[in-house]
Image (cartoon, rainbow, N blue to C red; front, side):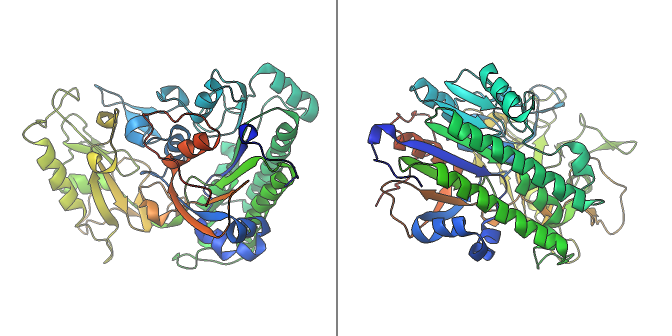
Amino acid sequence: MRNGQTQKNSLKVLVLGFDGASQSLVARWIDHLPNFKLLKDLNIFGQTIPPIPAQTPVAWTTFMTGKNPGNHGIFSFAFRQTGTYKRKIIDPRMLKSKTLWQILSEAGKRVGVLNVPMCDCCDIKGFMIPGFMSRSEGIPYPDSVREKIKRKFGIKKFAGDLEIATLEKAQSDPELFFERVNQMTDCMAEICLYLFEEEEWDFFMPVFMGLDRIQHFFWKNIDSTHPKFEENKLSNLVENFYVKADRIVGNFLKLADENTLVIVLSDHGFCSVHREVIINNYLEEKGFLTTNAGKIDLEKSKAVSYGYGDIWLNVKQREPQGIIDLAEEYDHVRTQISTELKKIEIDGEKPIKDVKKREELWWGTYLNQAPDLNIIFNIGYQAARQPEITEKNELKRYVNDSPRWSGGHDGTHDPLDVLGIIGILGPGIKGGKDLRIHLWDLAPTILNWMNVPIPADMDGRPIRLKA
């Protein structure tokens, strides 16, 4: 880091986000990751605990608001619209809580926010490039920054994530996939470093998406416990990408001055996935779901799952054709479903670790918009991504043995099974401290460091960074 005098009122914060970076892989390859090793040996290093579910949009929203999903309202990639059976894909416009960068802007701080999932253009002091889930993804804001990037790099739109066509070819043409994800990451890193030096800022944060995309497809190539484990050149390509991530950290550290607090983190980690459970088939077998000509009848079913371990009940005066009385039946039905699902065995294994009622997982203003139940899967299993059911069979074995992905985190898994990473260094911070921190604690920690008042409605609490 550059030399310079530390002044309390000039402290800056740099957050380097790596979506999906796994604490287990960083620990395995730490001797090949000199900048991560620097964080581990001489500064603060540890794990982030994602929310439930550990989905990218839910987790980054938890980080940026300092709140649990019950208080920021984002519970999954999609939700059931109030008063209907329809589902709608989320986007940042649905976020009702102020974000870290809005709070900092209101306090007079200048922010730069690049490619953060669930981030959208808003009235801030600084600049922004919206990320994953935003309709404005990749479009720099304001116009002055957009024109600056266009002049320097010859592009109109920032590519912070892989296009669908590349993702669809990941397994059939993995070398092309890795070539593209490396190109994307190198280009993004170059632009971010340019803005880091070129623009004025007090808070700067990019998120790199490559590790998440790689590990979904190629976890089986680096996890020896995976039933389909195969160590080959793809294994080396995964490790090489961690080396690239480490190098990106090092490049930023070279440019950051001594007044800068640097936080390196991921929103979640990964675990093995080799089977997908078709939950709606089991709900049908247990009498909670009704079909008509092989299709789910939402109006006559007591419960349905939409593909991420979420279960929604059909409640009177809440759903259009509700059949469960809220006062007399609701809690009893939830207990019945939980009991029956936890009994499921597949080839002698228990795929489900637990089934939680929503009030056991979340709390706050938007709790009534959450799924009624959420399934927590054991490592190796996740919910089938599509809610459609398959034909009944005598074995009552409703599972997909060849899922598209071999690695997962959001289907839904215990947060302690998919821990992310965090490393912190900066002025006055003494090394050798291990840390395990909830994502909702980071926003208040950053505000506290920057001497900005912490909103009373944040769930998180600032962690102590200095000895």
